[in-house]
Image (cartoon, rainbow, N blue to C red; front, side, top):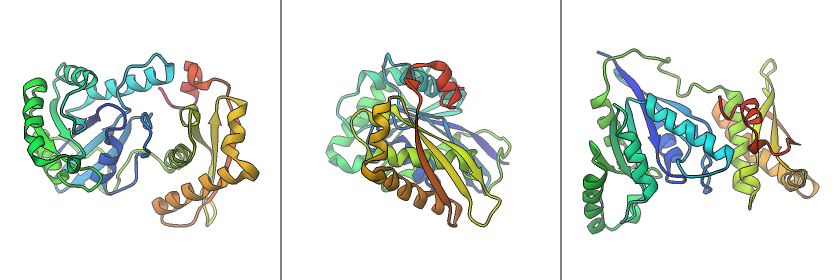
Amino acid sequence: MFQSGYVAIVGVPNVGKSTLLNALLGEKLSIVTDKPQTTRHRIIGILNRPGVQILFLDTPGIHASRKLLNEKIVETALQAMGEADIILHMLPPKPELSEEDRQIAGRARQFEAHYFVLINKVDMVAKERLLPLMQKIHEELSPEEIIPVCAASGDGLDRVVQAIAARLQEGPAYYPTDQYTEHDLRFLSAESVREKAMQLLHEEIPYALTAQTEAFDESGKVPRIHVAIIVEKPSQKGIVIGAGGAMLKKIGELARRDIEAMVGKKVYLELFVKVIENWTKHEKQLKDLGIIP
């Protein structure tokens, strides 16, 4: 009997969802930064085990916001919950539950999906504090499973996979067993560039930029990839480029290393910066850029 199903990873911003997905897959798929709201797309990661295929949906952080971009990416997360067979709700190891996490739990229980809670970063919590926290979660959120994990080190992840596999129904293999994502290299290249830009830039710039692969040519021995970094104000363009082009060069160098690791060979990566005024505030622009469907 073959088992398969969809698993949504949800939680507040910056709780470690993308780190968890990357650790589960053993591949760099979702971008990771120390800034909240990094994930904007619903990422499908594919975990294959003998007789089992688990399709993970890494979702944007769920949070309250009046900004159009943030509202739309939260809609993406909520939609993924409705499509999942199992919901993994990641929590920080804090003694009190946030109102946002209570709301996420309430939303999760509206669906027919199995509902698990993962307490992340348990390496930062004394053992005597962990049991009372688990008891509080059990009483207030009523999950089927509570699993302490450390996504960064991989501790507890085998138990997560075992708990998921035990709940999956009989189903087909939706993807080839050697495939770990539905996204192509065009998408992953742009995401890698966006990750490096977010890591290197500060203040409001990371939230006002995105990246888009505008040309991709694999016909030669060395794939040629052209990625646009898109900002929403002319003043931001110079910041991304940096003095003498230094910042743009650094972003490109770091992104190219990650892309080469993904494809297993050298690539030619060219970056440029363009301005789309106030793109984060217009639904049409968000659709044109592929951030929302």
